[in-house]
Image (cartoon, rainbow, N blue to C red; front, top):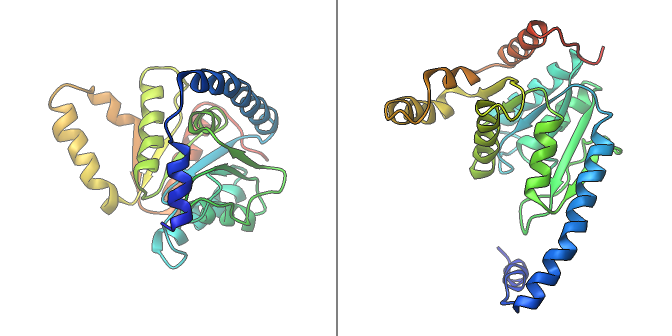
Length: 236
């Protein structure tokens, strides 16, 4: 982190008086509303889409970058749009594949002190910027009919477990959650089975909410099977 980035973070969290906090919170409501309104208006027109998550730190020469690009490409050639977080790494790969497949390519970017910046493969009218993570996460869930989860860090895990929780508690309808990379995800899945399930913190059928695959064809098969099961149609 550069000295300038460090200073921006420290300035953001400087001690504020209680009156300043109350005033800022009141005005923040309007900014939050504006982000919701813009997101709803612009994303309501994109049609059936699949979200692709993963690390912003993944390099273009990484095997998972190439796999994410091919997954997005195949999804778009079969009529599905692609939604990503709009940044570099796996997000860039997803938008790049969608762009290559001449499909819908959406980017929901978030303002961060480092790492995040728009990638060049997002449709010009489908690039949105958010200040609030929770608003952005609502957009991912509301306008996606499937989650493809590539290897990633805390942000990726956050999106993954929120989606599982919302489906598990029936706050949203069921849609496919696909973990890509058995080698990467096997340790987490083993812990879920051997600890969470064994301790009774989840039910056996909760595991049915997740599919684990290794290839782009497997991803497409899971998504297509879901659409056929519920008589849904992609963008064709």
